[in-house]
Image (cartoon, rainbow, N blue to C red; front, side, top):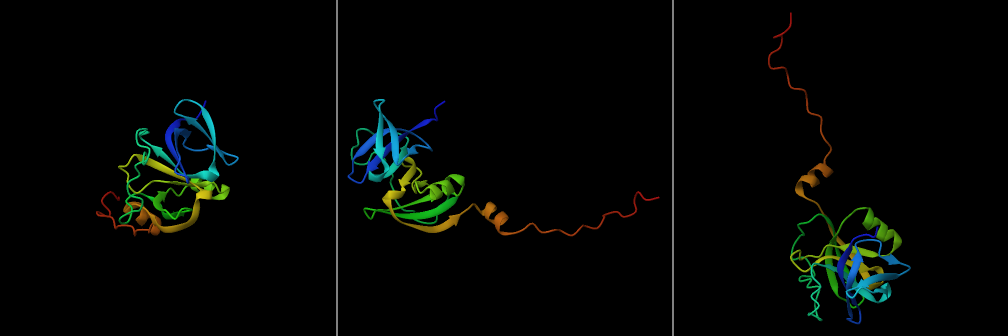
Length: 175
């Protein structure tokens, strides 16, 4: 059974846009992507020419300039979601920020040197998730590790042993 295909917009450094369907993971084989285009053809695309892959809600085929509609490219303040807050600089000096989940998929992508999956700063935009290929990056800056307040307190402190409370009615049932 084939993995679920999601709507994706691929943008190259030459500003060529390609619309199609990709699985959320495992789409990169031998530095090529097999994209199922909107008309149903499998098209191989080299990862070295790609700037980003945007997983989108709608294709916006009538918009040849900005179909991804990413919106903000950097966070205006500290992000609200959980994850690793990163700032990326691409080969064309564009700066993007996002949240990368700190899990096995993130570590696998670093080990295999494929690229990074990010949640973009503007969650209300058309883009739900970004994949930035490793050849498109010139630098990665980790801005912080963001967690929810309840999780942060449980991660930072060890559980303490509370002293036993004295019995409220000693000897009540003793004979």
